[in-house]
Image 1 (cartoon, rainbow over the protein chains, first blue to last red):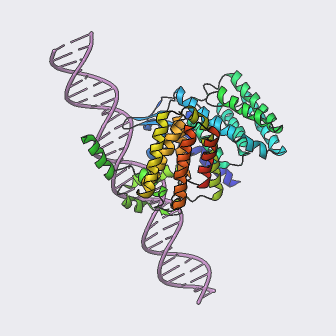
Image 2: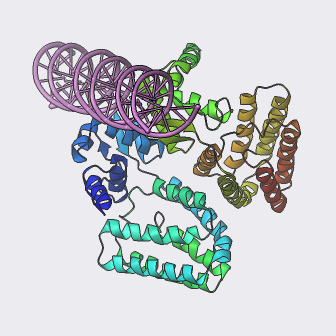
Image 3: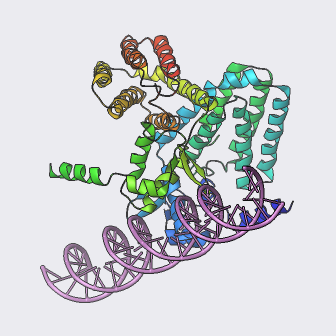
Length: 214
Length: 214
DNA sequence: ATTCCGTAAATTGGCGCCAATAATGGATAC
DNA sequence: GTATCCATTATTGGCGCCAATTTACGGAAT
């Protein structure tokens, strides 16, 4: 109890800078192309210079920010070419394990996924952008987890992050969000019916329609 | 000319520490489980403390070394579970783009791949372990490049690295190396004949037989 | 008026020091 | 003789300063 409280207090004050910066990039608070001056970040996240530098180095390794030696860092802006390429990779990976997902499905997991899909629906109306983003992440993570390959889940999460600059811009459209929400439920339906072909079809549509997130 | 000379001289003296450490891990010079004390690395690579720290941080992000807070870093040793998972991922990805590779194949690319496969053969006899490793990398990179998705090539290279601790140990067997060399040529054959099914089959065998590298 | 150059301000990036923490060895008590 | 506790040592990790490079600004010359 006191431990939880301590952690919460500590995390609100001193959460990992890399995480904070990452979130601000993913949510679009720091748009693509923005110059990330070290002093600004230092003040923004109330942290020291080395912490900023470590965060920038990490995110540049993950190709989320671009490093121009002796000039600075800026939020990576990806061209259509690369966006397309990453979508292709996600389609290959996520349809490639669809059979394993279908093989491992249980009534309980279907129920859990339904709940997560509903949580996403709920967030569409009430939640903040970040909560919405997280709800989507939770659904997809749970879905992929059924494949029984945790390494894969991590890799897909990384790939997804890699492409997620300027992510929410394409998200804001209510129509598209509702479309995504519907597709989530359709995917659960297909999973429940153990319809592999349909699940693959839905996954591909889901990834491609919203080129970046899905 | 003088530029090349300069670069060569500079690189021998002051190559990026992360690269050096990475290579020593991949070649097995630093076996799995080894404690990576900062002072040792400082001396080993003749560099400063912050450089060592940056390299360790980067490689721990890539899950190549494990970070134990306030205790140190050690070369990651991966369990069979994870090895299996990563092989599965590689199979899905590399067989998943086989069709694109076949679609984009040209006589020139076949010739180039043959040369690279022969270079690998050559290295089996004469080259050092590292040269051998590089020759293998070059072949697979060229093969994957045919898919026309550079992002994918990078991701596969990353995944391959992720699992490559204790890599060459399973490599040393001459039988296995020769097997790999033969498979390279078989893959080029299948590619030349545009036999998609055969290529997929070979890729899967090639990845699975040597669980880690291939 | 425009362009070029030199100087000043700002920003990045390397480096070393010192505190905090864990491992080690020895001494003491049981 | 063995186990436990304390002191010493070694290692990690945070932090700030200073040099190197770049950019911005202003003045002078064409």
